[in-house]
Image (cartoon, rainbow, N blue to C red; front, side, top):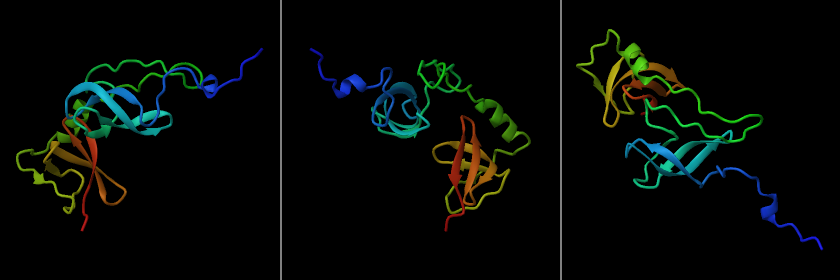
Length: 155
């Protein structure tokens, strides 16, 4: 006699990466690889997570900056998924600060309007250089550890 199939019989095999699931990630506040909860997924990959230790939310980073990320074997179409090549924040920082006077930065505030090439100081991220404009009221700022999008010119 054949048994009836249950919902578990139809569940996909392999890792369960979904919103609300736990995943190991590098916490930018704790500066450790810790357990995180997936908050946002795009194209089947986690993009925003929340640290289960300090409860800070940040983009998903599998490994600390400068460290070689681990390869995860996740089935995605044909073959396996490997993380993208690590960005080089040191090179971006050196390129952005070439010829800039970093001694007198402008204090960052969302209401202040910035221009490309200006040096600013952010309360959390430190000294940065405006390298681009994005979507009208946003700027791309290169800091020593990463390039971030900040708002500006908000009245």
